[in-house]
Picture 1 (cartoon, chains in turn brown, purple):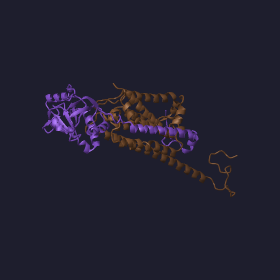
Picture 2: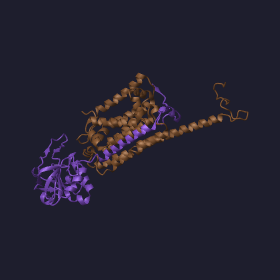
Picture 3: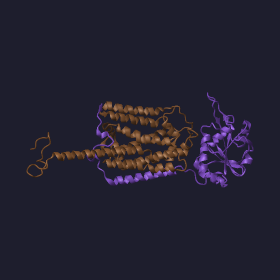
Picture 4: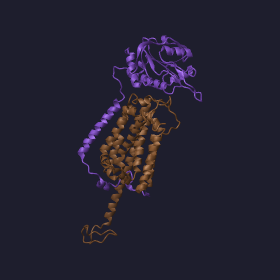
Length: 301
Length: 236
């Protein structure tokens, strides 16, 4: 019995084959989450629990049969889908579902705080994320790691970690690790997750030959299905533009919320100005200590 | 315990005014250096991605050089039109790639044929037309002429499919110096597999094979070796 997905020299079968390592990992994460809340009594919103559950669902989907098995040894396009599920779905949702106090507890470990501080710098996070992207899609890496269960596990966990890294400057549970402004977060996401991945995506999509022995020499799901090169081209297109709906949607949310905040702030300022009389009766503009205090404020001395 | 969602947990992050206050002081130069180093790593990774699929040196062969040149089997089999096909006469003066297989093969045969077909497509019609691909079935019971034709048409209609009596097929395998195919036991549905030689043997224009390509030969290997074989380069 296998505990994690691996490339095998067997024709593909639609008979379900769960991997107990995946289930054990998911149960361990649920246990850690529940015990943390119960033991430390911190607050967590229903929304956060839903985010966390969704993140876990995507983590399980990416790791277990059929996506995990197909990605491990049959189709390069599913390999790429798996990567996207880890980095663009599971990681950010798990992060959104983690309360700040839970995250702060994780940072109490030695070097954790400093490491996260360094890794959360947008330049560092963006470049490291793309190094992982390129390195883990290099043929030598894929063809080496996909042949063993341990290799596949390592690859999957690297992808998950790189997903956390990508989203750290954007939605870190601890505010101090987020990029300094909405504009910075938008530019960061655009460069790190939308623009740069298009370059390796282009190499994969436009390669005239199959790059990965694992998928080129894998039993085809169907003799009439896509060729190894066609499958790889789909993988390249996914790497190039598959992230667009997610990244652009997130950028739009950030922008609209920033715009909303700005509108609210300018409205509040306008209202505050309207409540303040232009003169104090003597014909002069009131100085701050002469201004009429807002209702409920302590009397001026 | 559950509490109301706080705005700090949302995608947009905290209000802009408070972020400047909680932000970590940042100095530019060390991060610029680190960024450059990491960018270098990214470029190295890109190099791996682009160059990682290249294998072997230009003078090497991807196939296995045979100990001694072998002549194409002297046999007359039946093609997919039901007509006799004299292996030696029909392939004389052409480069011929011959393999043994069967249409119900789930892995080796379709993968071998797919890689070879993709390589021939990449070579272009002018060069690929000088190569004859022959599949000799090891499962004559199920692989009728029509079934063989239908199967090969999925790859390329010009591929030749051959069948014969079990005795003829055994003799051809022996003459080609490959182990004889073995039929495995049938499952509950009556389906069975056939264990067979998985290499592709290349006979050059002189009718001699000097090289065979094992299962696992990739499109890139074929596109590198086939032009050399067509040009008369003798594997040694």
